[in-house]
Length: 462
Image (cartoon, rainbow, N blue to C red; front, side, top):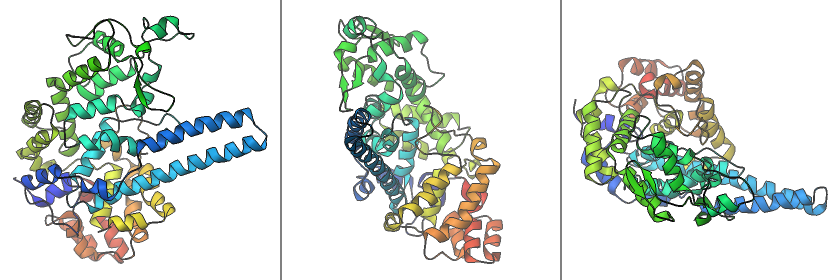
């Protein structure tokens, strides 16, 4: 089977929408990705620096109320502390609104799908009171700008981001022979978390060609990367392990390694064939099939390496491969967040309607429901992110929650529901299964008919 507009929208473009025609060619999809990011401008996300400033202020206030516990000054500090936490939570709700608004208002939502994918690839899990609210701000700062750019640039930004450094305990890593390691009052050592995850998860893959010695030496090279009291990234030479370090057969640094050596190492790692194949495999598994065609992986990896880590050529190689359009491979189950977002898109919800929902209604219909389906956003089980395997998502509890969402939430978030008989084609395209057409037409109520379409296995998959 060749290119299919309906399949292009359902598998890669965020789902079909009554407001937008599905993409008519691979060229149209690539052109859309290469165009300016209008959705980010239309629906902005909180700046990460806002959360950093909140974090600094809460640390100050915590010190005040601990020192003045039981006094008016302490009570005032505690109240101010709680106000900031409340404001951070409101910011996250607004950011999640923006995320959904972008998804439903984008003519082709492949950029939004890719943003979800890469944010998961570079998973970070909350490490503090304010940090739990900053996931989308982090992704907006160092992931989204590079989703259609170079992977090497994304890797450099993520690897030095305060949220990633905190999550993987890089802020505790001190070279044993550094000035702080030798003269510091506390006994400190090298933490390998960041080095290991960059090699194992972010670039080369678990089966990549690297050793424990490479991990250890890379961790030594990364010492010095930390954050200051304002929660901003800095390179602290006092922490940096002196000497040169051999990583993957290349020597980095001299007597006093610095950021330049670290950047070069990250760039070299991004350019390695193992990295190309690992990224190609992850993209193909997520978007196409749990068992992607070997020659698709080859084509994607080759395009990536030929373009010096540029991602658009890799996406194009995926989209131009015949395996991308095989309907018999329509088996990948949508993540819960993809499910509710694509359902909202199919229902014809607009960004303006998303932004106008009451906070409680929005959190209940989206964040709360997605969590009950098994995907608590920003709280993956570990640094490897969310599972891709269908078996993880298709459990009795998860399926029950998806059906519940389909039957209840559409009428709560929209004033008017579509005719179920027409909605079948709106949501599933011209090739909608006859069984789904039948149950939609036989439903006793409009809400039931719409719910049965959204609950159908054909809509749960891409």
